Length: 203
Image (cartoon, rainbow, N blue to C red; front, side, top):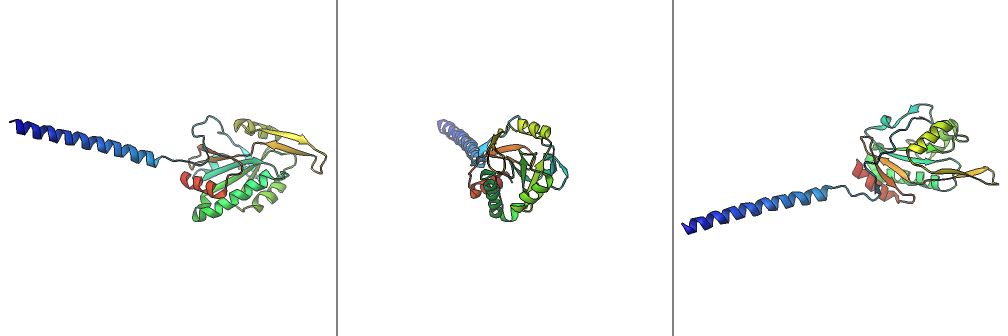
């Protein structure tokens, strides 16, 4: 009788231990499956929801147009001497690293300088980095609204050069997932291979 009870207790203990092992294993697998990005994860923020501008072909655009793709959204201007061309070049290199998945990434360039960045100028400047890149512009009022919604800093700096002024501005890139949700903030200077790695996770 005592032996039978011991056997029953041992079986029960083994079942309990097995159940605990399964729970722990499931937890480990869930942790391993969590996305770990190189860029700053801003999933769930309550800004960056609205973008209604015109593209460099004259077509009205909003973020919903690009659902099904990862979107990289960058704010800059065509007269920018360094940050903007560097960022667009890095995005082009990141697309090369994506290989066959490159067509699932859409790069959008929003001008901070609608006074000078006309549709014609954007059509010449933006696709020069990659034919798939899209330049976006709006009126002063539309631009101000978008900058406010995306918490973008931009300030004119007068100078004596040929351009007359430059613009100090936020230099990061916002990343949206395929469902159109804002997910990441990529700091200026992030290497193309690091950007490509995060894009692959979003894909």
